[in-house]
Image 1 (cartoon, one colour):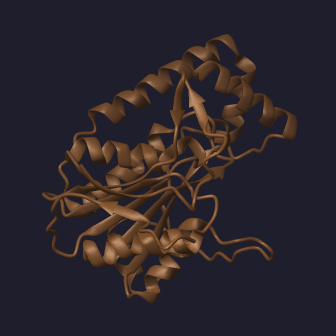
Image 2 (cartoon, rainbow, N blue to C red):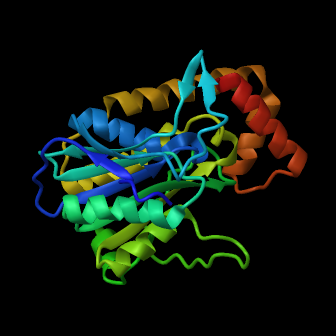
Length: 274
């Protein structure tokens, strides 16, 4: 890799051992980035730096949406009042070790971060009406006690399957432990038929956690409105498609669907909600 700097910082930032929240784009339902976008807006965060894409993202074959090139972005935001740093990024295609160490260099050396939370989603066979869980993986045993008052599941056992790389989030908190920075992966199960759409309930579960833990005083009106709007769309869709409603009711009862039924539910729900 080039010896050129891999990140660019701007502006002053004086925080007292802040918390870093990390979200990756391209996750299921984009739960992580939707959550931090809500935090950035609600807390009035300001951008203060970025990791440069060279060496981590291929610059050929850039996506174009509505005639606008979509370049990968890896940006830091800061909330002085809430003592939070937010990192919002696409997933690097190469150089994970160098990329994550660049994140930790900014977090540790430039922000004096004391702990890191990463956000992600996992695919769930449950119905959208089921309350969203919050599942954690930590890099230190004592962190579990800190999470218990916030109704976070802390007893998860997970091992990367043989021959596969760990998740980027798991790799990050492992590297953070080497630097004596506390790390937590937070995962929200998302119903499989909302993975390609949106799950505002999952987003609200994460926002609620941070609002409670850090006393942020956030307004949930916008998220509650998104949940109501989605519920209304689904209700109208059920009126037109009793079969799809029956599939969801079976999921609510704990009964599974076969492969063909699951594919039909996901396909038709996506068409109805987008």
